[in-house]
Image (tube, rainbow, N blue to C red; front, side, top):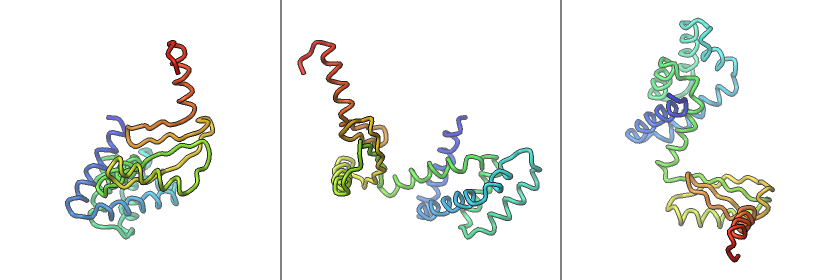
Length: 183
């Protein structure tokens, strides 16, 4: 099974628990805390994910670190399960998928906005409001710049791409001219 599918499956299992007990947001924060610990201690992450190290020693180290963290019993059990199934090397991908699922539970959708140059802050607000009306959900924009689009913006929400870039418009014009259509 692909690692992405594994991560999705584990994230989905945790979000189902979070929806049932009303702690989805708590679990999001706790998962992020785990990622922060791993970021601060790369040697720890490497050791517990490396099958060349003694299994009993890895498990002991993992359990001692997890027990020292201020996280819920559900999260401790969850992490123990992920570790015992030898999937802890997927914890970053699991956390990423979990964040997306937790956003869905809260009615939040993330959108990528690409523009040729930095836009004024009020433009981001207007775009966010328009996308919120279109989706019926709260939209959080993640803005990036790409001078290759020449002008305009490209917005991606999930599988939907709204391409209003000059580059695409020029490409479409070129295709129309090749087909002999009037522009």
